[in-house]
Length: 316
Ligand SMILES: Nc1ncnc2c1ncn2[C@@H]1O[C@H](COP(=O)(O)OP(=O)(O)OP(=O)(O)O)[C@@H](O)[C@H]1O
Ligand code: SF4
Ligand SMILES: [Mg+2]
Image 1: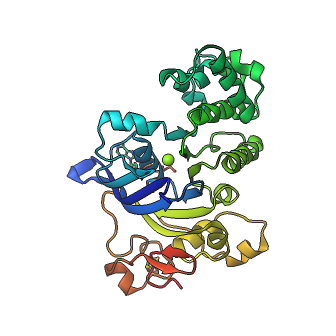
Image 2 (image 1 turned 180 degrees about the vertical axis):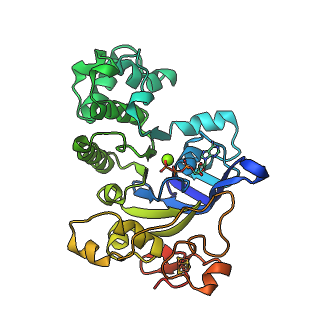
């Protein structure tokens, strides 16, 4: 079956100082199967948003390939892109800036359907009402303005709008990070529920491992523009194989004793290197608690370990 998203050797570089490009995404490959949720995690600045923005076409890929349902996005012409955009929708971190403050939420949700001429009049109104119900809001809310809602409710509106075109791929970039802790679980539960009902593939970006844990089938860990590990979520949390994954997990307190036991005792320390001038060999060697001479010169290959893949010379 064609994957919902296939990324191969993707590079997203930005102009940096002293003519050194900022290599925000620097050779990333992965796939998301139809209906599957992949969590993309890593510290601030590792390139998560650059990658997800490239997938939805908000930034240009420098090189590499991005296929959405088998269709190439990189280098595609405008007409082809417009067609593909209906298949991929994005939910951003901050619902306050994602919604036009002068537009009713009903109009905001109707907009993508209207623009593509998919519904008008009574049919459009019914569709908007159904979408509101789908995200746990009431149909009579359609006439309200964004400011009349809480942050959590606004994020539900943003999700309803993203679902309007029934995309094959939903990209969520830190969808609960700007919300009160008390409503985060509700929005995550909504995403899990929609995921299982609508069977759409999701790229779920978060710096917070505890968030992806309950939402994702697969988890990919990113460090300084590269993937360092990818595995089924349960396996990654129970048996993290890359020292960076272990360090990330160590910084999340976890009530699950199995996860807690697998944690490294060494918390993540040290500065994140400059993505315009990444360290040679393994990019993590400047912060890795078990780095050896080999790590400073030889880049670790991406290889299969257990049910996942990892890039570390010593992962077993
Ligand atoms: N438009 C841009 N121009 C120049 N550099 C950029 C641009 N966008 C991102 N960067 C740089 O690219 C790197 C990756 O940034 P990105 O926003 O993708 O990281 P992130 O993982 O999403 O971080 P966060 O968790 O803080 O959202 C950073 O060094 C950032 O400063
Ligand atoms: S390759 Fe070496 S430096 Fe890199 S994560 Fe593995 S042990 Fe650490
Ligand atoms: Mg980001």
